[in-house]
Length: 420
Image 1 (tube, rainbow, N blue to C red):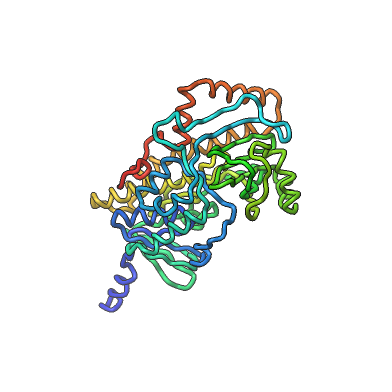
Image 2: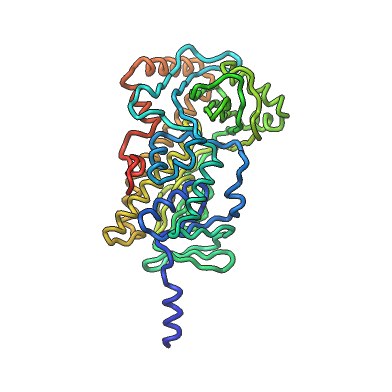
């Protein structure tokens, strides 16, 4: 081999980044910022344009951020950019019933005053969190943001992983992270299979303006067709996640706004007075989607690329950001010890840390949906009695409040509000 060919091979194998992340939704930018804060060089690739990523229009999406997630955003310097737009969750009321008949007299009530940490969480619109993350990413010298870029291929070689973009560019790194959603191309190319099933349900998502104040109370109303979540936004507004059987949901989506509200009112109830739409309506098919492994050779998955669960507990984004916090801590600590951050022993630490939590929450949400999304009289009686019994047991209730706030388990440092 002549010297010229040797130089070409060395140039091709030069590792440009420590970590290459595909997907710049929410988890991808959060991971990029956490890693950059630990001194790693990161490339963040997404098929969307910067204009689409920074879209200021409210599209109906809002997230119930657990208390621990708020601590993570605060530790990363993000919270100060969004806190004025966030609405504290002070109470959660869980009840069972039928549309038009109201809730069962047996219900479960979580009060934030039963724990020392403060609000159980906050509601925050997608646009505010997305733009805050994007602004921080663009201001960080250790992050290379590559928008409007499609990944055509990926390959693993000794000590590195590379991706080829559709425009011919080749990017190399020690580790490739898929944060590219349930249909993750990163996972597929790495040979990671998925376990999936359809719930036969759709979620209708919209913002609702109402006459009376919500006082920071979130409601989860279980009906035979699926749950309705009413989540407090700033002002006299709430975000709804209304789950129906697919056929009924599709029929609701083609109604005009007034007819849609007429269908919603028997389910929403009168506790907040008159209601009206405060934005557009959206619908999302529901199903369970779990990657059969969180890792492959020099590949790790986070967020929806790793798991897609039922939205009834509002834990989807919180679960993804727990992945981010754990993976960032594992990689930064490995780098400080001089380890190869893409090596299997390092990635195994991430898999062991996150695997049980993901499986447990997926099974819990799946089971709750199956138990509550039916009209069997015996099951209705059993779940109503269970809600009432839990509500009457202060120790168990406080434990569940802490669970909802994300304050239990082996928390990564960021979720404790501490830097890595």
